[in-house]
Image (cartoon, rainbow, N blue to C red; front, side):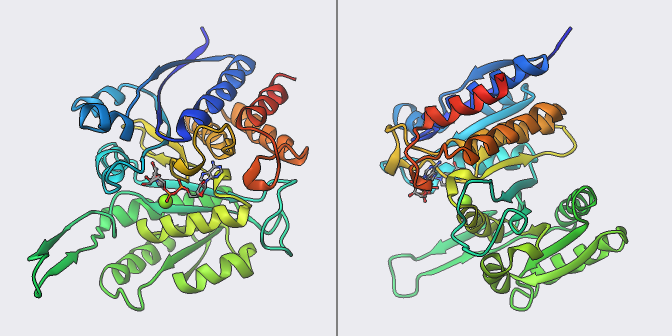
Length: 353
Ligand code: NAI
Ligand code: MG
């Protein structure tokens, strides 16, 4: 009997309703070609759900998706909904409660795409950002006191745990062993001396267990400049939740568009399903026009299949993306005039051919 994967599909809001179906069409083609089947169930969660029902997902939502092998997700958020809710009530909730502590975000220049870095080529831009996904600056551990008075005060306390740093560090060194054997810890421990001093200390301890992998650390201000001036120095970057969030948009930008970035929120132990989504948001400014770039979403499908063990199918999808871009099948964000569905069709045809 052929393998069957149960996938929870969450389009979310905005362009999610266009790029997720595009990604699903590619997944279906890959499943057919490589002899596995995908059993999908759609969940209409997100800011649109909130407007109708007062919540991003039902109370038993997490329990429901725990039964799946993976979650294929677009993005959540709408201009008319309080923008502190998408993260708190959906993305962080899923990422933390399902222990998806690795946010895997590859950065790669596809052929046929022009990077804004005019002198850089495909061999210069090819690395992975591993963003710690469960703690750090984004734990929302804080308080506002007397907000409307002259002595108003607000605090946000970042949190770093030994267990949390060790596990992402081990993931980084193991991944580097499969790539170019180089880990760069992007940090800011010269000023955030407590949390990130501890972070650096633990990563350096873990580094000693991987003598075959070279290790260095770089402050984030320097790393931001290096993304632009010398991206070729990076192979595997391990960094904190907020730094990783910011640098991955910069990674998207040097690839040519935010719309190209795919990602996985991964629970490496497989105790819970992992969630795969593009690095960008719901882009309400371009929603409903069939012009969004579906490649980040499609690449996320490849990362999902790789995680599920369907490595050939995953590679075939990435090859299909590269085929589409190399042939100039580009959406508006890449100065092309292909529609969302045309790019997806091109990739489906490549897989079927
Ligand atoms: P965004 O990533 O949605 O958009 C930023 C810019 O990039 C926009 O100009 C947009 O048109 C463009 N863009 C993004 N994806 C694109 C694609 N696939 N093709 C072509 N252009 C693309 O970020 P923004 O505007 O800050 O946030 C919009 C909403 O998304 C907010 O409600 C925000 O909270 C939410 N959001 C949700 C995320 C998630 O669900 N994981 C992540 C980031 C933001
Ligand atoms: Mg972000």
